Image (tube, rainbow, N blue to C red; front, side):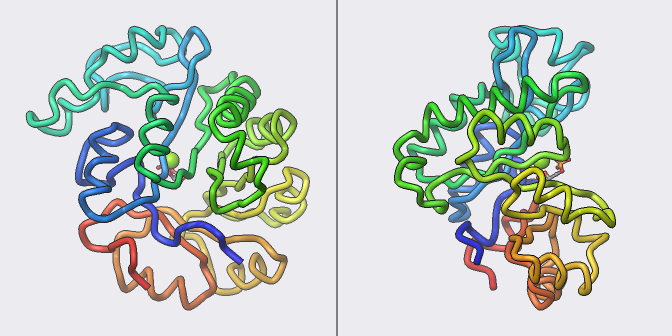
Length: 250
Ligand code: G3P
Ligand code: MG
């Protein structure tokens, strides 16, 4: 059984706001979303920031790398201007600032650990320990629905998160599902498989559900496709089109 929201806003507010910003969370709230997926990586000084790309140039202007820039300097960067003039000045959020806003607004979180290459272990344990710092009571209560779900494409990051805070639920992110998915997922103590809906088949969906895992897809932007994969047993998905697929879809 899937204790989490079924429809989740991807990267904050999908295509309605600059990705991985508080403006994205506000856009999600405006469409009734109280569930978000976002990406976390570590700054040069080892502090989590909400960013997707390890390099500058797409969502923040200029050249450079997250891993070579301090969190204080990252937090001063404009992560909104690329998206539109009305978002000018929207900063790169610190992880804790983002988490605190979500907690305040009762937004459930799928925290994607997105390590800069070479920092998988550090990022996995930092995210788990820092999340525990904010969710001690919820972890003690043991109610999965009240806890964020950590996910990552990096098995090393997930193993580090597992070793640091075993009680926080984890999902293994897989673009194409490999033959040994179940062995890997069990080894990581994952509760769910998160996968690209484009490579999912009804047989794989059935096998994952039959093995007792949650099954979540990224990134589903058409209602017809959403209905199809729900028919295969998929538990939930994230979407960029929060304007087309609402939180109570399905
Ligand atoms: O967590 C699902 C999805 O966000 C993975 O892909 O590149 O959008 O982080 P990406
Ligand atoms: Mg992501």
